[in-house]
Length: 408
Image (cartoon, rainbow, N blue to C red; front, top):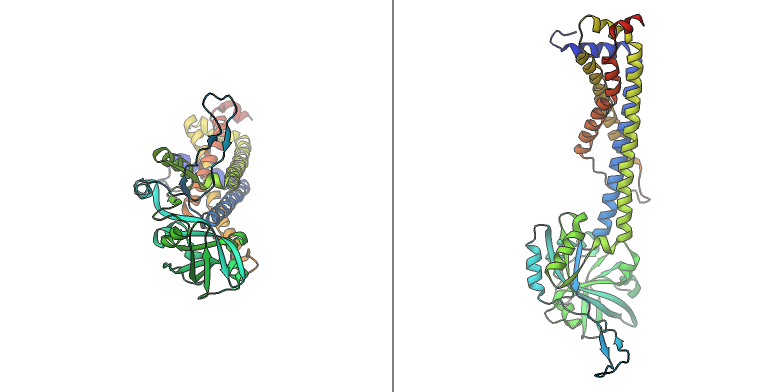
């Protein structure tokens, strides 16, 4: 043994070498636990990121819309005690007041990445003797594509939009029997009628959305929907997607608009994401607990088996603090060595899973992001768990009476 090693390290290494079988088994146990934590954490994180990406790839994090119109009472004469007749306001497309100022204010917020105006409403698409009801969305391409990655969903053509262009979903193109370069007549109830050229066909990953979604230039939608110079909504993307609801409430408090975050509009999906997060934490906790009990049980047995040796060490001048540190070091080293082996095994399992687990078309189920921080956190967690698990056996060993221990 090297002379420069501290006394506690010398005794600790000697104990571990003499109990090779115990040391090997506990290291394997720790490695399996760490491998499970690494594999399941990366898998659940990848699934969650994939689900969130699919949901947010086709929608903004926050959508600002005009405040709902208030109801008004009819048929109430002065001094009359008859109940008022409440007439619900007509549902119509309305513009957001001072929307340019709202966009400027929102873009100035540090939590916000970008904002884009949109004008959307119902319309009718006609090709020959076939017609379909559609959702017409007018956009400014540059800011809108930074929020909704529409070019990523392009199947054919391109996503450029002039005043005479239109982008449609794959199902709508199929239903109308049209393709790139064909003309499509679009009309709205309050606006005019216009003939547009199909420049792009997109697949939004949802049959219903592909049947009704269309995109045109903002000024084209404003003309068709009767919103000259106005917008019906403002789409916003934020830096922290899970803080979207907080940012939405802050915007609604500052501007006279209604702010809906993706967390509210996708409440069931968000609940599922939270359930996955809780499951991930629970897996880590129970696997870590099993690792801790495994290390503690082995060290307790080690203390019992080495009672005489500990008594001799105490009788020859070894202090209680040194005995305590010997077993704490043993627990920490077992946790560290096991975590390194487990991290490698977990990474290998992830690579194999990503290689062989495929969709029907041969593409990966989803992208796995193996972050170094996960391995660092798991290594630290296993090492600390080893130290904590060794605490009780170490204290017991340090408190052994030398005379009683030697007598056996």
